[in-house]
Image 1 (cartoon, rainbow, N blue to C red):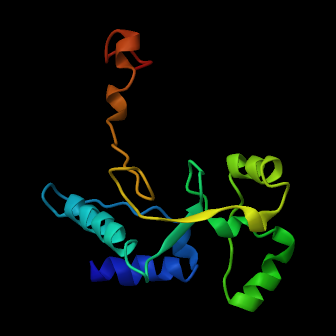
Image 2: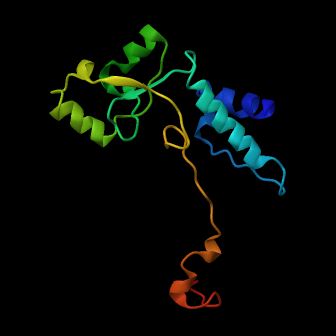
Length: 149
């Protein structure tokens, strides 16, 4: 766990190149991969419930949009200098539409709420169940021996 934090998570948090990588856990059965992922998810859930780990989102956004994405691109450099905070990404289409239609472009009026990570409620933590590519859509071709399968 310490190695993962030191070699992957801390550099990603400092915006180093590792943040653009996918973390792939490989190893033998019963090697602790699933346990490690479960511990990370539980840790994130618990941390988001502390004051230090507070996370905020645009209220009513199905994607739990980052409120800092409301800051216009034209002022982000000045914002970064003033607050020592770099903003990456853009508003999701749903929030962009809401800002224009509901708030008349007045970003300061968009409501923000605190959210808590929850795998069960699909907030901040998602799951992906890999599957065997050989088993997908084989039935469509009738047999695994079919070259299209």
